[in-house]
Length: 262
Length: 263
Image (tube, rainbow over all chains, first blue to last red; front, side, top):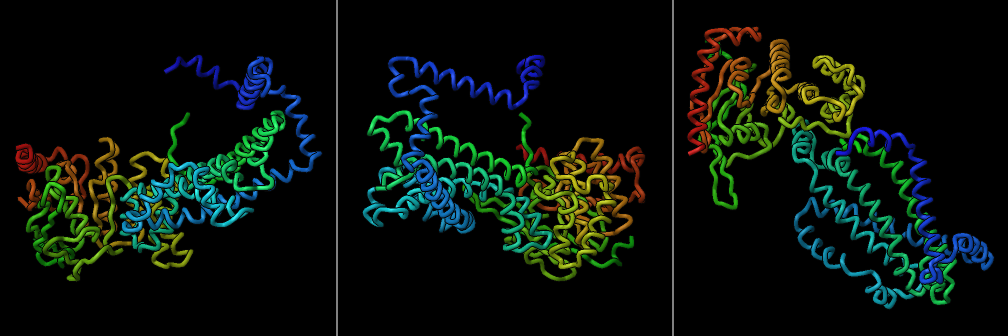
């Protein structure tokens, strides 16, 4: 335990000030990376990186890349989520489903998506489809495991309590298990979003003609590190924005939870 | 006593329960028979692992007996039913619902009209003195308040038999005493058949008309003690010589069983 005085001092600084401090620290680190001759070749000064936005916009690819990646990420994530929810519930509800499906999930889960990209491309060809399939698969795996854990962790006495109050199986599913699982579903969505973004490069190495992941590779090949860094930053910002939106819904959906005050 | 003339509400008939665990068969209950009269208050005491909770779960219909059966109003118990309400030790409130919504849970399943649901829920929230917390979530309530909500929720669906599994076991002594008085008051106003499990001998005597002492594994009924102390019982009842006499007797019986378990 830290002493109280120090805690009060930390607590007295507003959140936005901490955020600013965090950003400033990052900029200082960046500055040193850019002036260090060993790392300066790739870590171009911040202003140059920001200016490259104009260059990429001028080439007519910036918005196209962002748009394309968003479509793949959101499409793949949505497919993954729509598959994960029913399958996770089925796995928890019917043990045979669990015994058959769970080993598959554990098996595929640890294979890096890049490894099965060629398989997908050879099966369905190039274009949007393979990108969505790769993201769908990777997000599905992580979300299924998480939601499944949530369903089997539902407090048995809550189910009993509902049953003695007259609830049948379908009422218990909708009115007890589903709401009790929402915190896990929110966590699954959080993991799913980050998986969708981290899988972008793999997904767009299926011969995509545009996209953030595809462009990062292309820019690396042509040693254009300033726009490459810009693209990396864009991926990070998209992730943070998605997290902000999710936080908003999380507060609305799971405020009933007993949480430890931090 | 007048009990013989009253109707039998719950008939527990030669109930046996065997669990098949990894370590082999475990007989939790063996040949338990008990008749509970209409509106009677029965407490069950016994050492941990004597099968009291198993028996309650069988009456509730949450567990099936291996042998024997339970009858409520001469109808054999198969599965749960709203005529048998349960209050659990761990409160079992739905944390995502407010106090009011928790109490309304069973009412909504009964298919009552909106006004009836609202009216009944509020009546029982008032009964447990929680109007101020109507829209609070369980996380905002103390243990005693949570258990009050659970009792209101059980009462709201108007069960004929109320099964309580150590409902005050997790509460501090003061809250526990308070809730015992409240429960007695409610029972005297709105008579229901109560089957109450506890490991607290004093609690059993202050509440019950009969105390059932269960023996250690395999669980059987060891003795049934009539509590011939008239209602209304108050906290002063605890000083009554008869109370102390009964307490000494029951306590020594339970302790003997406790020592059996230790062997």
